[in-house]
Image (tube, rainbow, N blue to C red; front, side, top):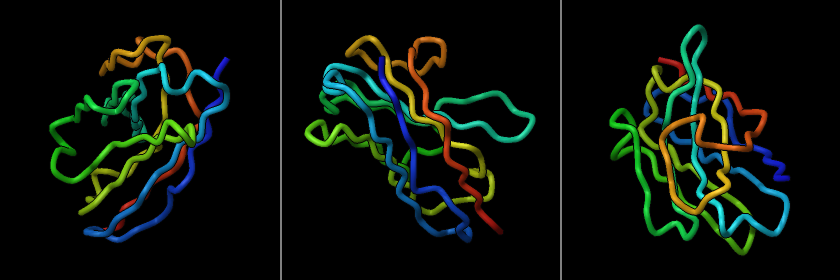
Amino acid sequence: QVHLVESGGGLVQAGGSLRLSCGASGRTFSSRAMAWFRQAPEKEREFVASASSSGASTDYADSVKGRFTISRDNAKNTLYLQMNNLKPEDTAIYYCAARNSDIRSTTPRAFDYWGQGTQVTVSA
């Protein structure tokens, strides 16, 4: 079992930055691919970014490429999402997710564990 806890969300003006963190319990963090997803009101959950178990391989949604950076510190069991040049359309609840695999994925159903989410609100 893996317990994920996100933090770092908040209210920011357009053009600003936030850094999300996701702390994971257990000893298996370094063997798991991880990802960030987000869900805006009345919209489906969508992929944001993913990282392989080592963090050497990453992938991003087209809408965030060049603005967001996913990274991980396996020694600290923590996943990060650095978000720069935020836009109002980035407003959503952001979720951290973990897989029972070391291979990254962009599909929500490929992930086995989810955090409770952290709200990110970007004002115009």
